[in-house]
Image 1 (tube, helix red, strand yellow):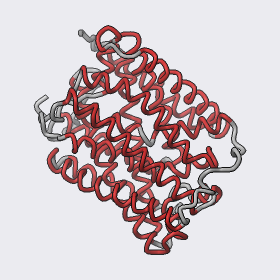
Image 2 (tube, one colour):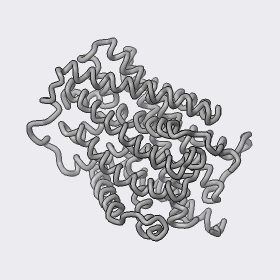
Image 3 (cartoon, helix red, strand yellow):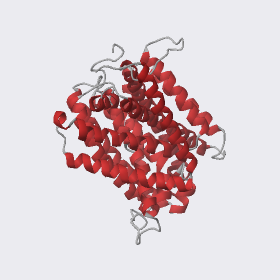
Image 4 (cartoon, helix red, strand yellow):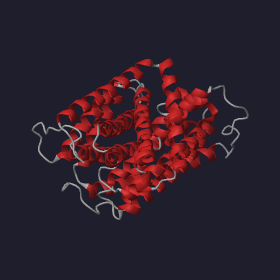
Length: 432
């Protein structure tokens, strides 16, 4: 794997990439959608998502300590299930979930940027700007690890600092009053609604998994991959809670839901006026740019690993460069298509379904096939499986009653991947 440069990423760089993916999609793209399901409890939905992500992270931390690799999740699945159809299926679900995340972030970039202009949110400029961002992220990624690490670190500092300024400023503008933040009564929401809010909030944290794809390049991977995962989750939890409190202190739930694709920008208007709006949009642009760069960085490496493991077919289509560079092209193309044809809500829903199914597969593999090798705490892994299963079931039920199209499309994609992998591997027998 000569295209991977050992020791080319520091712990700081890995944390920057992890927080880049999480913050880029999480707080800007999902805050309004989570509020739509959870009502006045939406800040606590992000806290619940952090708890669930913490249980999930345990399996990844244990495997990253045992099997640091540039392939990350692809290698973990191979260790648990061998070079099997399920390994390829689950790894591709994760890769597709990451690409969907890129589309989510790209459209969020377009939506927030347009808040600076008198342009409707349904404008064709949303996907156009999103596609332009994907193109920029592609160019950054082919520039090499050193440039990616430095740019990710700078943008991580800017956006984290900017978001903290927004959060503290928003709470200050509301007089640091938590009357609106802590509801006096439970919202009129069903259990399915609240579980669906948790399903979407998990997407705000799943970026920690991209850190595992840097295992072949990060310094001292057996300790620094797990450290980067834990640090990234802590940073994002604090930021998400502060921002959710600031937004809920300045907007009603109805206002948040109405502006669900750009709710942070909307919350800046009453708190800070037009200058606050410009500031918030600027931070959103930085966050989404770094999120796309970090996500493409990770998914291109994971799919390149799948190719090297001979679990997926590969053709260079006449393109120059190595396998990982080819994957950068393919990932950018698929993300572009999703950005053009799907809206934020449907993109987020597909991402949640694919990720939760893959996540359950990871935990089950740890519990069933790797207990002797990595010695996990079976109770923690079992809780992670239970939480994922309950939330996935509730989310699918909710979507089946409100938007069955996305369930049909998701099921069709999964069937296509599973059938295609079964056919490909039957024609290309694997040996461990």
